[in-house]
Image (cartoon, rainbow, N blue to C red; front, side, top):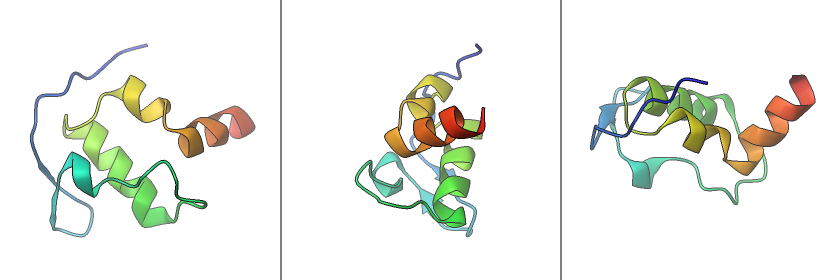
Length: 68
């Protein structure tokens, strides 16, 4: 698995606003809406969050396990 190391302090999010680690969805969110998923994808592709860190998020991990 390829890992993207953290190197960015902020990226432009899917809505056009600045996105930082503090802006990412929390692990306590019950259901992730499409915007929250898009924020995670943008954070990984922009180098804000590593791929292993994103995959470790509980809601995302459950989705990966369920969908394969």
